[in-house]
Structures are given as structure tokens and as C-alpha cells.
Amino acid sequence: MTVLAHTGALTLRQLRAAWRVPAFVVMNVVQPLTWLLLFGQLFTSVVDIPGFEGGSSYLEFLTPGIVMMMALFGSAWAGTSYVQDMERGVMDRFLTSPASRGALMVSTLVYQAVLTVVQTLIVLAVALLGGARFGGGAPGVLVLLLAAMLLTASFSALSNAAALLARSQNALIGLSQLVTIPLMFLSSALMDTRLSAGWLDRVAAFNPFEWAVVASREALGGQGRDWPSIAGHLGLLAAFTAVLAWVATRAFRTYQRSA
Amino acid sequence: MSTPRSGPALAARDLVKTYPQGRGKPPLTALDGLSFEAAPGTVFGLLGPNGAGKSTTVKILSTLARADSGRAFVAGIDVGADPAGVRRAIGFVAQKQVSDPMDTGLENLLLAGRLHGMGARRARERAEELLDRFGLAGAARRQVKTYSGGMIRKLDVAVGLMHRPRVLFLDEPTTGLDPEARAEMWAEIERMAAGERMTVLLTTHYLEEADRLAARLAIVDGGRVVAEGSPEQLKSELRGDAVLVQPRDRARLPEARAAVGGVSVFREVGIVGRAVHARADDGGAALPQALAALEAAGVPVASATVSRPSLDDVYLAHTGRSFAAAEERHARAEAEGVAA
Ligand SMILES: Nc1ncnc2c1ncn2[C@@H]1O[C@H](COP(=O)(O)OP(=O)(O)O)[C@@H](O)[C@H]1O
Ligand SMILES: [Mg+2]
Image (cartoon, rainbow over all chains, first blue to last red; front, side):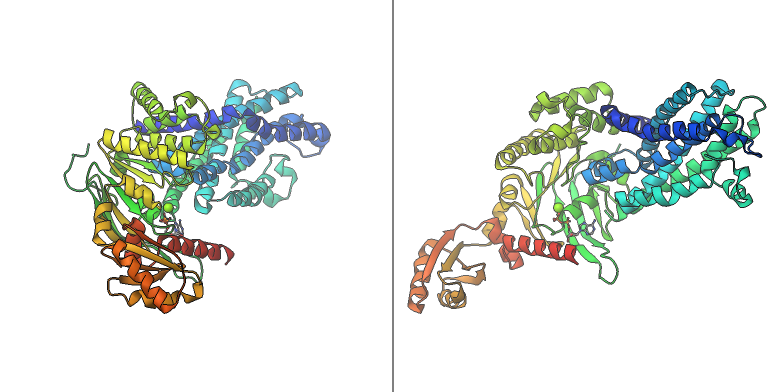
């Protein structure tokens, strides 16, 4: 019970900070929206390429991909708040309080996931205004939100671990350049992988980012949805998140050893 | 609940802590067998120049860092065996600011209360009481980033006091404050020590601060305790006044030292900075003798002073160098470390 209370109190602290600087939350959606509208307009004829099986509207195909890119790129920077707390001495105060390491970790993951939900709803609204229609309805949107939250939580955990180990923002730059961009290209976020080299399809099957894209695109699609596949991908994503959160919580020990 | 105990509120036994310094360099020894004990309900001071190991000691006692070897007890709880128990018993004010600049003063206090399991109502009452006491009530609903340095430091202390800890750590609470804010903080700490039944571990590199606030103190140098006692005890152990004579010409310091050393009433004759430093039972009577000896040796004198023993003298007697010189040496070492 106390762990829940601590997690709640620490999550609220971060939400307060975001609420005071809402521009920051909005800024994070500007880039994804630009991609969505630009690509969605420029490449409308992608759907006409023989062999493209992602439906008849590229904007509809693109939307879940853009949402997951936003979640992935945003969460790579999640560790920034740890770096700031470490520089400010706030982290040391929390670590000498009865708050558990687990609560310190989970609260930042929950906070990041909440931001992702807000941003996802904005992107979704813009896609609808742009003419996209999703047959999947409310269950489809729920899966999209759940997948985006899990993806956010897992990569936020990774970012937090990097922050704790390196104690500097530089490690996060590395993470966002060397990890997230390859993951994005090894996926079907922007393009149906069946149109790419065969090996890409096989590699993408091991890509957590791809799991989130596949599950949400399938769920948004409407008729004839493959629920076992959706559940399977979400399950993999949940397990991946749990493992990374656990590893990241362990990173507090290393932080403590070098304190 | 842990049971109340008699015995020391704080005990450090042979603490050793090293930090790796990167490839090819030997590890840096921050603590080299540091030991001390503090009685419950007192202000205990750790006095030492920058780099002496004060913050490292506080970090180990507050469970933030682990010692390589040695043991530590806080409120009777073994720091290594039950860190969670220690965390419930302590308040921690780091050398760095611990308040969140993005939250308001009130929010910082309430969060501290929540983390210590206080109910919403009780936390609010306590927060308001502390805001009043530290003169921060008017700023309670402003973000901390708009506070002055002195206000932030007061809030830091208030945050540490929220849950009425049995032991409060104050790591250099007045460093960087202007004299006025420092004086206010001193008054605050004095009132707090009298009002709440708790033990305070105060670290400082201001001799004056240790002298004024600490009932007992340990002088730390190079990661060890070199002297321990009440400020009065430490000073009276020196038996005698300090006599300081500065020759007009720096080059003639060795001659001046020899001349003063030749007078039998002086002990511990040495050179500190630009002056000859010596000790005598009755400084007032001894000074003319020193001046006569210098005149006989033909060394012109720029200034001469007699003073009752200060903590600086205590430091000098135990470490062989003045406090200011130790600070300078550390600053130089840091600068070289950065350049390397
Ligand atoms: N995290 C750290 N990593 C490496 N060296 C450190 C670290 N913390 C302190 N030190 C070194 O340990 C020594 C003692 O430092 P510290 O305990 O901060 O001294 P004080 O608080 O008395 O100024 C210094 O030489 C300092 O440079
Ligand atoms: Mg220090």
C-alpha cells in the first residue's frame, strides 16, 4: 500500500511540473503532426504500389506508426528528469526517504505514459480531421493507447537506467541516436515491410517497437481483426516493459555505489 | 517500530570509503578510518576544510552511499543491515539544494510528509507550522525557483524536519549564504536544537559556525577524525595563547623564527603563511620578549598579535597546517584534477 501511495505522490509531482510548462508537452506533438500531415499528403499513392497490403488510405496506415514514433522518441529523453533531479539534489533526498526505488522508477514511467496518452489523442484527432477513418472504433483506440503506454514505459525505463549509470544527458543523446532510429527503420511504421527486403520482415519480428505498431494497426483496422495476434504482441510488450523496469530499478544500486 | 535505545544516536566506526579515479590512477581515499560518536539530543559538528570527507560521511550515515568497510549506527540502527529503518528515522539536508525548484514550498513539504507516511491533514498542519516558523508562509504558494538562496536553504531544513526525525543531517547548511542569511540560519538551528528532541549532525567548514552551534565536534582532516571534544575542551587543551609576529620582509621569516624560538617561554614555534606562529602560557607577557629578541636580531616587525586559542589553532595543532592553507590546497588539487 505504501508503495502505491509513494508512486502516486511522486507521479503527481511530475504532472504538476508538466502542467506548469504545458508548452513542453505540446512541443513534443508538433513534430509527429508534421510528419503525419506531410507524409500523409505526399505519399497518398503508396497504397497503389502492387503488394502493399496496408489498406486503401496511407494516412490511416501511417497514424499508428506516427503515434509509436512519437512515443519512442519522446521516451528516449525520459531520463532527463532523473538527470535534473540528480543535479539538483532532489534525487538524493528521495533516496534517503522511505520511498522505495521501485516507486521512484514506476512513478516516472506512469508519468511518461500519461503524457503519451494526451499526445496520442491529439495525433488521433488530427488524423480524423485529415480524413482518416478507423473501423476499429473504441476497442481499437484502447489498444492503440495501451500499446503506446507500454512502449513509452519500456523505453523510459531504459532511458532512466542510462541516466542513473552515466549521470549525464549525453548518454540519452546516444540512446536516442543509436537505438531508437534503427528501431524505427526496422519496422513497418512508415512502410509495409512486405515490400522491403525479406530479412527486414524477419528482423522486425523481434523489434518491440514493431510489436506496438503491429498490434495497434491491427486493432484500428476494423473487420476481421486478429485478436490473438493483438493480444500476443501486447503481451510481449508488457513482458519487455516489466523486464526493463526491473533492470532500471537495479541501476539505483550502481548509482549508490558511485555516490 | 524500532524501540528507543540508550547509547549514542550516531556512531561511526572505522569508516573507509574510496572512489575509483579512472584508468591508471590509484583510487582516491575519501574516508580513512573515520570514527566518532554523538549523544542523543545534541548538535554534533563535523568540522573540516573542503575535501576532508564530511559529505562522504553524511552520505554513508544517511544510506546514500556504502562504506568499503567499517560500521555505522543511526538512532541505534545498523546502516548496512537496515537502511530502510534508518531512512524512516532521519531527515536529510544535503550540501546541495534538496527542494524541488519546480514545486512550491508547500508542495515540497507535503510531498516529504507523504513519503514519510503522514496523513494529508497532519502533513498540512505540520507544513504550515514549519512555514510559519521559518518565515516562509508568505512564499508558501510560490515555486521554489523564485526563492532567494537563504529562503531555499530554510525550506530545505523545513523539508528535513517534516516528519520530526530522530536524527537530522545538515551538510553545510550555510555555505554560500550572505552573512545576514547565515545569522538567521544559525538562530534557526539553535532554536530547533532546543525545541525538538533530536540529534543534529552538522557539517561545516566555518570555524565560527562549529564554535557557536556544536555542543561537541570532531575535526576531520584527510578522511580521519584528528580531534574530538566540545569546542571549549579542544581550545583549552591547547593551553596557552597564540602569538603571531609578521616581519616586514618575508625573506627574513626563517631568521625571525629562530629569534622567537630562542626565547624560552615560547612553544610550538613555526611559520604559518607570512608570520611566525608560537604559543605561550601568558601571551601578553611573552610578546615584548619576542619583540626584544627580534630587535636584537635586527629583524624589523610589521605586526604582532596575541589571541586566545581559536578552533583554527586547534586545527593547526592537530594537522600541522592552518585551515586556510588546507582549503587552498584542496582547491588547487581540484583544479589540477579538472585540467588533467
Ligand atoms: N562521488 C565522488 N566521486 C569521486 N570522488 C569523490 C566523490 N565524492 C567525493 N569525492 C572526493 O572525496 C573526497 C572527500 O569529499 P567530501 O566528502 O565531499 O569532502 P567535504 O564534504 O569534507 O568537502 C574529496 O577529495 C572529493 O573530491
Ligand atoms: Mg561537503
